[in-house]
Length: 101
Image (cartoon, rainbow, N blue to C red):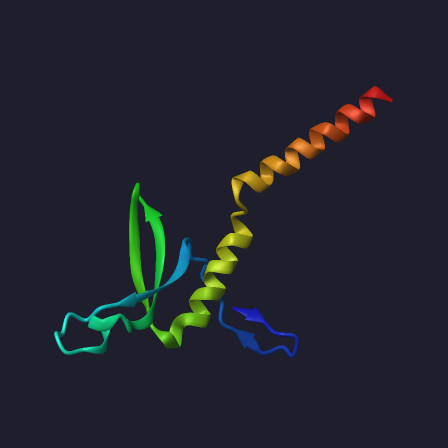
């Protein structure tokens, strides 16, 4: 458990990989409004890759903020590879400039 500024215990956020996506659905009932294009939703899903396959899990509206926080924590702990490459390229360039002086 973590402590807030006031000293209260805060629940820990378990980092989750993936992304959060809203989807709109057709229910399939012949007389429903969705047959004319007014789809149902949004329904929120978390998508991620596991063992080379894409996975999907429904996220209830009540859990939406908690899942968003968990996804943000994962991104904070696992920065994208391209961002690291940009930083390394800049570091290499600066090192070469320093050696040239």
